[in-house]
Image 1 (spheres, rainbow, N blue to C red):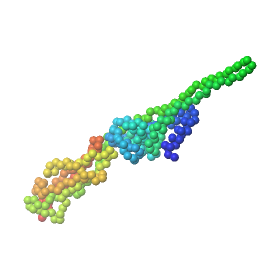
Image 2: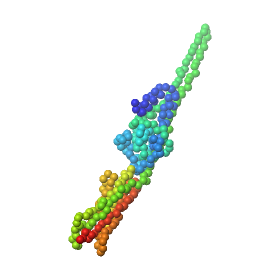
Image 3: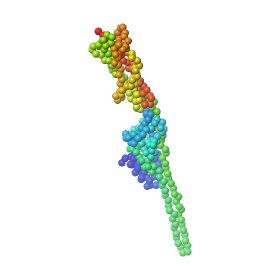
Image 4: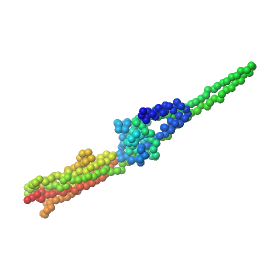
Amino acid sequence: MSERGAAANLIATLLGGSVIAGLIVGALLGLTGAASLVGEPAVLADAAVASYFDCPDGDALGTVTRGDRVFITGRDASGDWAEIRSPNAPNTRVWMRAHQVLPDGDTTDLPVFACNVPVEAVAAAVTTVTTATPETTATTEAPETTVTTEAPTTTETTATTQAPPPTNTTVAADTTPPSIGQQQASPGTIWELDGGAFNITCSPPEPRQSTVLAVVTDDGGIASVTASWTDALGTHNVGMAAGGNTYTATVGPYPADTWEAVSVAPFDHTFTVTMTARDTSGNESSVAVNVTAIEIGECFG
């Protein structure tokens, strides 16, 4: 039997008992809370917008925005998901990832659910229990004498216990920039294309363009990664292509005689390529690599 099924059977049994049943069920309903589902400090949400689902790892039903208040009613057995009251349907329970909520207070007594405990089953626990003793009359007759005794009427009693309101939680703001690293230029040195004023050809052939790359990650999502640099042709600012978490851009090739000739070796020109990552909340971080371009004249002779 699931935990949800066991809870339903317990409620059904207690309702058939006595006035005390209302108190016990009320205590069960009081087990509400939020976020720190396994006794650890709550993790701040990184995303500006967080989704809620019909079940853990199920279908997304909608979203809440940073700063929205939601009601937490339980958690799953793993502690990775929090059950909440649907923002759009108070009688429906939906699920959010636990690390995307920030609790207002202590929530160590959260109940564990599998998925979608109906609100009606919980509401049934707030019950009125009434007992009454009917009015009774006992009559004893003696010759020409009548004695009548009436039992006192038992006062109708009502025991009602309601669960306290759930703990409010807030989706935390994302202030963490993307993680960007493992940057490199491959190769770090390139040559101008063959030709030019003296029609020079590099032999053996040398690399003519470089691929710059970096590995970028962010829990809230990447909005863009760009590469920028200034060379003999001007200033460049290009979007980098994603391959998983790796982002790349190409530098070069440069036509012969692109770079200003110098009279002595080395005939090289080094410049910096800066790679900047921006997440969906506007946070940024950058890394840089150097690329060296060599004039075709160095291949002469």
